[in-house]
Length: 101
Image (cartoon, one colour):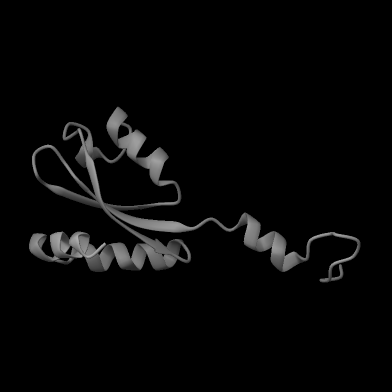
């Protein structure tokens, strides 16, 4: 299959870019003042899941939530690596990170 544009058809690289979703690392502040860090490719849906009690086990009884930080990543692997880095941070470092937005 040719990888070029003929008569308005999309190239393979253009199709790949359309199908590639961005991933995000996020931090939410729970009602008990704890912080939860996670990753997702759909922030709105993930927050809705947390609010409905369908998110992580940790957040089931800790709503309502406030989204305090998001960071866009190029793919899931990078998002997971960044999540790991953030989870090793102290609470103060996470709050500082959220204030830099």
